[in-house]
Amino acid sequence: MFAVKPLIDKEVQNQLCLLTGAEFIPDSLAYFAADLEDDGTAIKGMIGVLQFKMTEETGEILTLMPFPGKEEDEAMIIMERTCMSFMWRNGMKNMIMKESAGPDEVLSRSGLPKKDGQYFVDLDLFFASPCKFNKENV
Image (cartoon, rainbow, N blue to C red):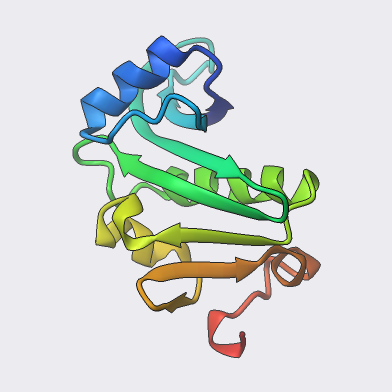
């Protein structure tokens, strides 16, 4: 069992970034993903951290960084989708994520189209049918 939660405390965000090797971006919003005990009452390990920002119509994932050994954890994709949903529900039309946001083995698993060194998605198109979204048809 795992959880994806918003990171409110900037010092905790800073510490999680340090532990993953990501640059702490103080003015960003953030999420974390964590493994939970079977009863769901306590964190037993960290999975990853995500930092993002939103402008008038575009959201950008600045950091999508796993903890060591968690590069292929499905929670990384779910954390990304959680962030995309938050952006979309807050009026963002598009989302970008540059190659520098995290390791290639994590970013390439996102299932998003990549062009000119960044991943891009039209959030309205994506959330019209997220289970049937196909990056090749974009």
